[in-house]
Length: 267
Image (cartoon, rainbow, N blue to C red):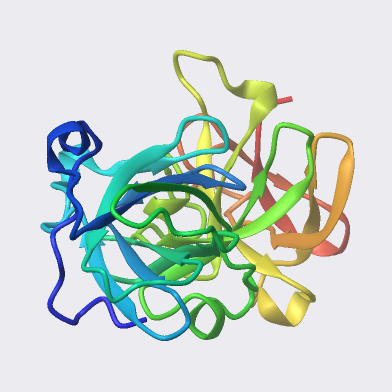
């Protein structure tokens, strides 16, 4: 699918009551996602019956940054596609979620549906985010993206791509989109409050060699009580100066075995 091709206009569901006619057929598409996907600017859509196909973007113009679409497992984004009577066989709909830079956030394909010629055919497409590698975000997500862990409602770990930010490891963050590629935003729960959470970017690692001088691949990452294979680097700090040692607000500098320093909650 090439979303850059000239797009057909997706006809809104509310228009179906007056739009149906004998020379056109319609497919109403309900789009869900296996996991929540935020910041969707457009959906790239391909409809095919195996011989003919139609491609479009929904909405035709990307959503503004303040009104981006959100996909989730329960509340569908719904729209309809119209096409001429060249389509005869069962139709299959493929949907790709795109961000503001037209980079893919996930993709899904609905089951083939018998075409209701001159009428309305209904289909549901579930978009699945791509699995990625936090240690190789450029390769598995693309330039300008980072790969981080998301825990679902059952505390199951999922690795998802996010637009990367500019905050370096150790600097404060609100969420993963604030952090540079190769890192994620982690909350220090023991010294956080609802009103004032303490969060910093932390670099992912598999060994001490990934972390640099004065840092160690020291902390395991988990989803609730479920462990994962991911770890993050300690944050080097100056334990000989004042207690903060260059740590982010709310954290202090501690020294551990082997001379490794890290920023952590006050004890």
